Image (tube, rainbow, N blue to C red; front, side, top):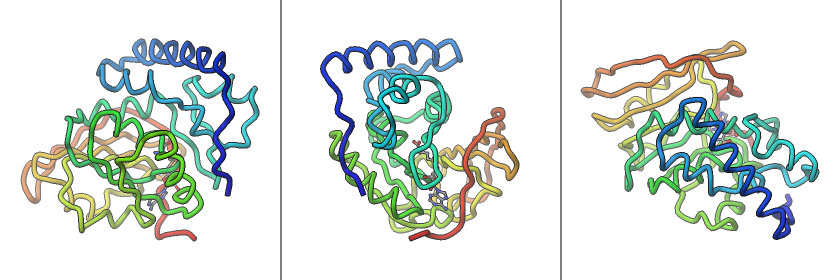
Length: 229
Ligand code: SAH
């Protein structure tokens, strides 16, 4: 397992900063308006979350384009627009307890931390869990509780959560997650088993009732059952 970060020179840092600013402009034209979300994307070095085997050309071309990219173990880092959209829809307030399903490379986790949320994040693939557990603190993101486990089950020990964000395509809304959402809390989850999914926003209004909104079509890797060593 490599824990090396990409070697980035001072000039590269300026270059990447410029590229991040352009990405923020693209996200604004696509409708993202929450300033804390845009700020987080402007400051988090997305290129550090790419596979460390990525070539310099791949980094320069893709790290700040609005595209999903491979992160190893057959998984992807979500498209920046998708990260920004899901985060904006959750309307995260400082100090809120947020459960993320699908840590992956930790980029979305870093965005949530930059919003001053208390983040709990579950990943089912040991390889990614191990990598991200080292990467996030290396980048200065220390606050998240990362858990190797099955996201379908949530995290009953730390429930209830103010917000739940599912970052893989779910065939149905897991009951455990509904139960672990606070009354008044919100969950965002891409639903569907085909090529694309419907983004669903749920607000828990009573212990057993939910308001449901659908927010358009997105493309995610599937939420798979159980842990994979
Ligand atoms: N949040 C990531 C997105 C990663 S892609 C980002 O910022 O880019 C989705 C992730 O969900 C993958 O890492 C995948 O391994 C993970 N995943 C799939 N099924 C899961 C499950 N049942 N529980 C937890 N994580 C799961």
